[in-house]
Amino acid sequence: MQYLKKTFDKLEKSQKLEAINKLMYHLNSMQSDLNSNFNGDTFISYIFDQDEMNPEYIEELKEECKLTDDYNQEEINKMKIEIKELQQQLNIYKEIENINIKKEDYYDHDEGWQTTNKKMEIIIKLKKNITLKIRFTYLYHGYDSSSDFYKTCYIYKNDKELKINKDFYKVEEKFYNGKKISKKVNSLGNFQEKIKQHCLENEIDFENLSETEILSLMQENLAKSKKIKQEIDDNEQNKNTTWTLLLNTILEKIDQDSFESLIDKMN
Image (cartoon, rainbow, N blue to C red; front, top):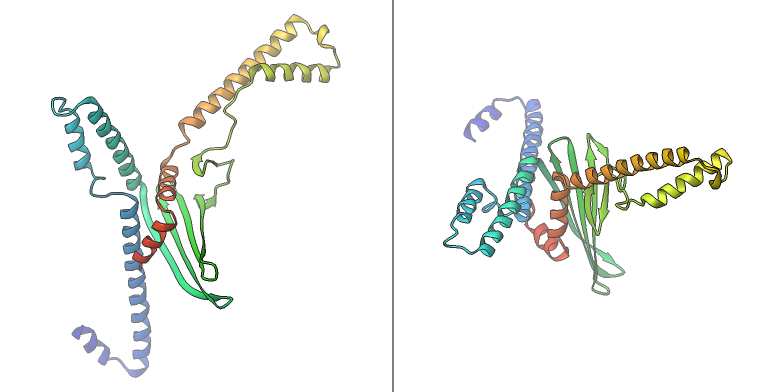
């Protein structure tokens, strides 16, 4: 500090204001980075138990599972489930590149009654160019003691916003990767519709269809049904990814009560 003061005193008057402005800019930038890092650490510590979510603890649990004389099968199965969950959390944590959090809380007057408005926006950058933007909004209305709590989410890949039911879908407020497709395959109904369409296009009656035509249509329908089943299997296997697991965990853990507690901890 003394060194900075001596250096500052050597400057001409015209240079001192410029030096102060530069110093203030860098100090504000440092403060913003510190707040951002602190908020990110606070947030991730709330979402994941970092004391348990570490390789050493997971290895300890794996060794415990081998002690069949000390634990019964039910206890071992519980530990195996815990290992799987912690390993999944650890894998998600390793995919996080950066967390930036902005918060707002202020009071306003609504028809003479004090109203609380609290907002928190979380921007999480993951590997593979995935970005999650999650916004929580809490409103408290003093005139009738009512409250509203909103959650809005946006998912980006390569800075392009993903579209619901095309790039991802929701089931009971949970997010899943991939397009939304029907899990039902009505092979018989599809075959009947294919025959009907074939007859219309070729202007022939069903009774006049040859065995060769019916067999050909049946083979086409079978191939289409297999393709649909494969799409369903691929969709099911790829529906849970790092971003879906992380987003669903965040949305599940943060409700109105926990949000109020969490936002008060943020800088």
